[in-house]
Image 1 (cartoon, one colour):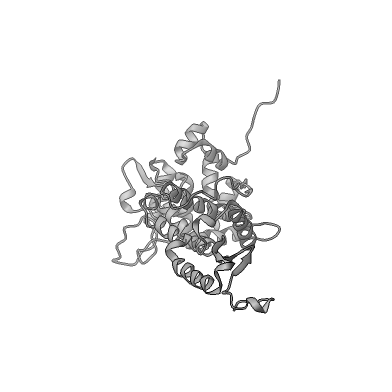
Image 2 (cartoon, rainbow, N blue to C red):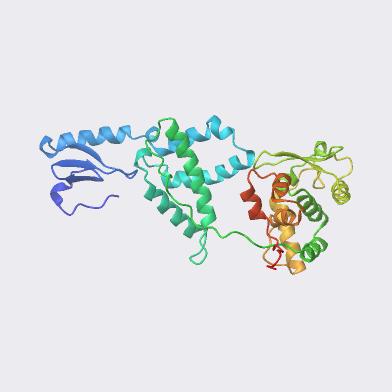
Length: 335
C-alpha cells in the first residue's frame, strides 16, 4: 500500500507520481522517469496519461522479455551443455534483479550494485562469494551483448564493470594424500578418481562415459563444458581403472550403457560421487581438497611443455592451463 502524501491536497495523485517543476512525472519501479503532462493541463489529464503509461508497461516492455528471448535464441542453443545448465541456474537470480526494469533503464552502476549484494548474500562478510557474482555478471553481459546487437537495448550496461577479485585455488594434492583418499574411498569413488585423474577429466564427463566411448585406441571423451573432443590413449593404469569400472556391481540380468554405473544400471550423479569423495577425505584425514582438484593434480603431474599440457587438458588457451598447474616449480639458481 502506497504511503500517504504529506500534502493532503496531492492525495489524488496515483502512486509514484510526483511534481517536478511544472510537470507531473511518473517514476516506475522498473526505473527511470516518465513525464505525464504539464500541471496546467489539470488532474484528469494526469490520471488519464498515467493509466495509458501503466497499461503499456507490460512484460513485453521489460528486461525479462529480453532474457526470455535470449534463452530461446540460437545463440543460447549453440552454447555447450554445461554452460547452458549453469546459465539456467543463474537465470532466476538475473530475472529477480533486473526482470522488472525497462531494458534501457539499466545502467552500469546497477550491475555493480547487483554484483556486490550477491557476493555478500551468497558468502560472508569476511569471504564474499565473488566468483558466484562474477558468473552471474558473465550471463548478464552475454544477454546484453546479444540484445545490443539486435537493437533491443541502446547500451550494454555490463561493459566497463570490472569483475570482483577471485582468489585462485593453489591446493595441490600430493601423491601420498591421493593414495590415502583412494584407500579410504568406496569402489565407485575409486574408479571415478582414477579416470578423472588419468584423463584430466571433470567428474561430470566421467559419469557420462558410455560403453561405446571405449575404443581400441583409448577412451573417447567429449568435454561437456568446452565441447573439446579427445581420445585418451591407453596406459596400463587406465586399462585397470576401466576394468574396475566394468566390475562395479550390477543387478543380475541388468544391462547398462554406462561405463560407470550404479547397481540398477543408471549412471551416478555428480553429487553422489562428491559426497563419497568428501567422506573418503575425512576418513583419510586430508583437508582443503575438492574432487575437481584431481584435474589440477593431473595437469600438474603431466610431464611436458605448457603447450603439451594444454593439448592434453583440452584447454582453449594456455592461461587456463597455467591456473591448473599448481605444483611448485624447481628452477636453477644463479651460478
